Amino acid sequence: AAINVLSAAEHEQIVVQWNETSTEYPQESCVHQLFEEQVARTPEAIAVECAGEQLTYGELNERANQLAHHLRTLGVGSDSLVGVLLERSTEMVIALLGVLKAGAAYVPLDASHPAARLSFALQDAAASVLLTQQHLVEQLPAHGARVICLDSQWSEISNHSADPLAVHLSAEQLAYVIYTSGSTGQPKGVAVRHAAVVNFLSSMAASPGLSASDTVLALTSLAFDIAVLELLLPLAVGARVVIATREVVNNSQALKQLLRSSAATTLQATPATYHLLLENDRNFFHHLSLRQLLCGGEALTTELATQLVATGMQVWNLYGPTETTIWSSAQLVEQVTSSIALGRPIANTQLYVLDGKLRPTPVGVKGELYIGGEGLARGYVGRAELTAERFVPDPFSGREGARLYKTGDVVRYQAGGELLYLGRSDDQVKLRGYRIELGEIEAVLCQEEGISEAVVLTRGEGAEKRLVAYVVRAGGAEGDRSGELRRRLRERLPEYMVPARVVILERLPLTPNGKVDRKALESYEGVKKEEEFVAPRTPVEEVLARVWRKVLEVERVSVEANFFELGGHSLLAARVVHLIHQELKINLPLHTIFDEPTIAGLALIAQDIMIEEIENLSEDEAELFLDEYEEAIT
Image (cartoon, rainbow, N blue to C red):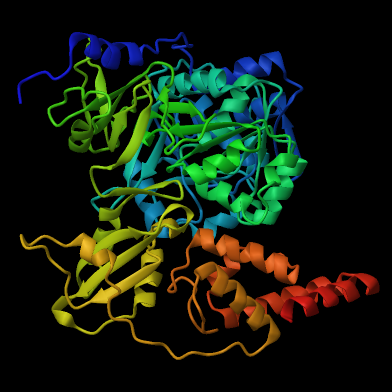
């Protein structure tokens, strides 16, 4: 075990040469200062637009300055934490810049997340102020922050000076704190410094590359750290940001239309989103202004990579955990082989593949990935022990106080120095771009009354991957159906963490040494009572049943069955909306499937939408609509 299996030449290549990424960047600058420098260069250029509203660089800067002055009067200052809970809008960008200009750090929150999760983040971060909008106030959870509504209170905010603040800031101060899944049952706040974000933005501006002539379509939730690239990178280089509203993001047809009308040149999305855009139209990207596609958040399959490369655009595979500031490696995908590499480290970043004793592994030998360099976060808010466990001393750089982040990702080097992803060393998974600790879901399940044990696994691959929970009731007692358990989980977990199915067992299968036999669970269907089958009773129900059978890959489906209990999830729900549009020529909002997850309930909503649309048509248009409807139902 003490033998060094690497020769001196191999050690030099793997540890030193492949990590020679030293690059100049504005080390003393803060994130908003990059934006302010661009304001000075192009004050009249369009900076951001959303739903028909546009702001120039000068206008955006003035509004952010006014908000910053207002925040300072409320006591917000250096390293203060300010919650941001806003709909996708130009106000969202004003909020981020205003918080940063005031010397504070923002805590991004998603209005679609359960109240309990939002409340935990606000209280754990001890946010002093919460920036939101008037219509969201009623759904705010319990918290101790002062609420500022950017819409209804803007007349008061706009009374402040539009001039820059005279605030001395350090690049080592926090830029944001973002909450990610935690294995203890509660999310953990990752505290990211300005210097880390500035290095990331500088590296991304150079490669993959972004300039003032570009337009970036922003479609990622602010609570997902990759939104920083979509919102702040364009503003640092003079490009234009087009923000997709939540309604557009949740409607594949509307999203496709915005991609066309916005003349976007750069799109960043997860593989799941690319699958959705390409579904039923593999040539969709051929007719757009896009020049590069950035793909990350989960594994890029060779099938999807082949489709994207065939568009003729630049396709980049990006990888990185939140703790090392968004993306840590990048790979231009030019030729698709049997697997897609994670690529090489970005600027001022080091990637090490180490064994259990923190020794570099040879080329082709798997190990755990550790990341070092400028991108490392300060740590976890209020979690010193966990910070020390995951951020360990760096034995390679020779820099005093340097650290490495222990990712938990198992990888290996290829002969050319690119990394291949092999899996996880723990129970963390990536699902539709979100990083999920299965232990967090299990912990929440076990907090439910009457549940004694719980195990959560992923089933399926690629776009069909879903979560399945296996639970045992305490003492074998009777209790809620799986659907009721899922409903209560939605009150505490975001939708992407709610299992598509909950299987109730008498006991968990065990291995001979007494551990839970996870492989046996993967093929275990559990005890499931056959529910009464109710056949479609109307033409619309028949069309919806046909769509559900196709999407869920089942032979028959009852109109009273719950879409999510049958294995549905948010991505499949988006496919249902897309197919309903194709079949019935109506735009059904995505949230209706969550509100009415049965065919019976959804059919009534669809009929109301059809009647409303017909009433707005001319006689000839209405006749054509009804002809297409007749064709769909027959």
